[in-house]
Length: 404
Image (cartoon, rainbow, N blue to C red):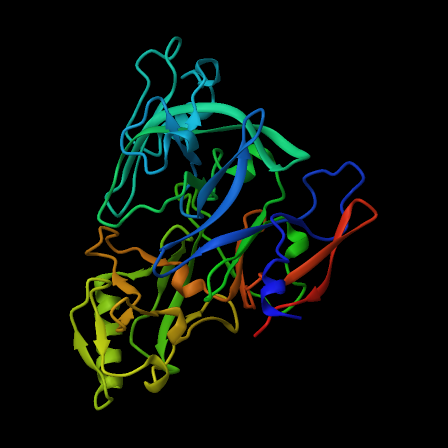
């Protein structure tokens, strides 16, 4: 098939596998994703809010519990045109006495002074320096034209941007753990996942029907009630299959982070391993505004970069492979740049974060009922998949039309 024709065969929302007669939450929903690690720095999904429903684009963030959308209240610091903002309606605001108010306020610094008569304010601060302030609202949230529910989220009307340029999305989709998350509020199946393509785009899913029956590496997540993140460990860091001396690491899987972060001691070991490995190879370290560590002198395909591996010691044979494509980018200047950053300098203290770059071309699964994280290598490029409806209640993949 002609490549131009195949590009037109994309589906904005696909429902996988057999759906029950009542079309309930028990079936997997699969959503197309846009974006890339570089140069955009985000992956986003489109979902609708309100009656009548209006589409909004959300930055997918498994490291955050609260979902929020830029809001015309009016708005300071919003990044989308006024006609794309969520329109605040006074009777949709959530009062302080609502059970979700203290849950969400505990994520920031705002508290209610008069619980009986004022709306519930919220504020959120992020590692890159971005801060968001607004009010909680409740409105109809759509996972599909037939699948909708009342949902509490943030109407963000005061946004201060951090050191990185903010994505041109309308809001943030909080897929972390906790009572304010989508899975808790909408009572969907306790499995979510994503598959981001190194070529850009991919898909996100809700429900365990989309989880492969075999071939997935599973590791337990932290059961501490205080953390709303997906944390797993301990793990040892290897380079080219050899120990680096960095052991007993715990990592946060965070789809809201473009790059991967390790604490200063681990980061120093990574830089040391790369420096020794690249000694004598035809590249030279150069400054580049894209990232702190970059090299010039050769194409990525011409340099034999080796892989890092996180070997999880609590589970046999559970290894997260970080191939060069999972930790390197090509900058606008054509340089090879390291997509692993010093988390301590970024304000993460001793935390280690696995970001989007290290999850490319992997199906990543968050099972918070069984308290597991899983992953497997996958082709996440869905641009050429063709789906047809069967019997009005099922969609089936009938052809893979991708032109390689």
